Amino acid sequence: QVQLVESGGGLAQPGGSLRVSCAASGSIVRIYDMGWYRQAPGKERELVASISSGGRIKLADSVQGRFTISRDDAKNTMYLQMNSLKPEDTAVYYCNAEVNSEWSLRTYWGQGTQVTVSS
Image 1: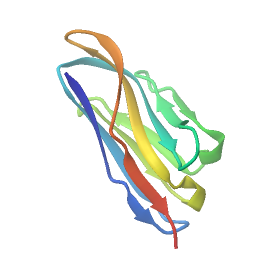
Image 2: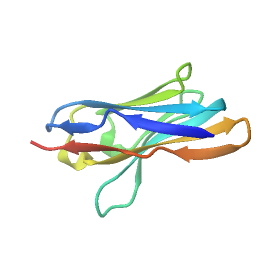
Image 3: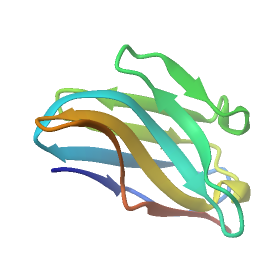
């Protein structure tokens, strides 16, 4: 079994910074594409950023120039550095990863971590 666990969310002031992490554990052979999604109250879940196993990065227009995504394959961990935070960044942030385990190749989701931007 494979698990994704997010950490690092919390409260930040507008203009502040937070870093969230996503650690994968279990019988992992290889992790392919990884991504961060977010869902605000009353809104649909949206893709914030993704990073392929080859390092190709995609960022949503709304976070370009403010958020940075990275991964450390030695630690099976992905990061999202969020700078210049805005109140509209408030949401539950979920990580997502395509994982080849001992038994299957499938997509996994973390449980989510709350990010609140407020003064």
